Image (cartoon, rainbow, N blue to C red; front, side, top):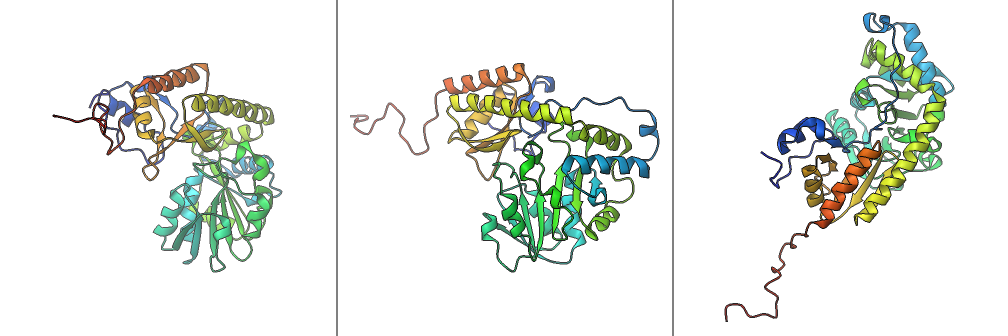
Length: 358
């Protein structure tokens, strides 16, 4: 199928999949601007690694270095509460299998993998609109803070009040940009588990590194379930260096905040409603969202669709001047296109007051 056709490909479940878009639209992969994920487009500069990190199994000292760097970065007092994993997704999959059947409430809509994996492990799952809707019989409460894809945040005190009498699981995959809302410093509580993602803020999602911040005995249960050498030697070394780089972290927070503000300007000038987001992505609403997705794809700009919310699109933050200019041009092209008639409306040449065929 060529890129001149109007039917869009099935949206990937988690964004990305540029290869599929390139094949569908007949546009070479190297021409695409991928704004479909909430991953920092300006990744942490990879340090030069000694060959031993590639050749040897990661040993206890390397794992200890990673845990200490993570504890310092997240504000955790005890590095033993830090459980490294090959991405926070691995913990999302493992955690439900470690617990007996529970009544689980998930604040939704949110990252779908939470509901999928709790249900797959035979827990009784219900989705609720907010933490204020949690009932007393709920044994596990799952909240993404900030939420994906709308960027909704919950105050730390409000979350902690809802941890009493149940396990509170807080997915902080996008919290690097707003550390004040993090519950990481409370990770020693027995009723709390915090998930952190390394790849999004540091722009190294392919490294596959994430963390659970948990007290005993859950921390040990997770380590055993993940197995030995869960994190590769290169990932552990790169993560340990990056998490300790305070200068890069501060500068990146400032840059991403400014870039997200610039993105807001482009989206608003295009007539889009900004309905949420973080400094790594923006969620927009428009009745012609499907047309916009298609028009951007024709220009080799990939954004995120949501099958259950067809009037929503998510835009990642462009990483440089060229990317901003490409997006601005693609949005302007879409604005110049005539809007298709609404379903059920008459063509313009057949106004109700006109007689046809008489």
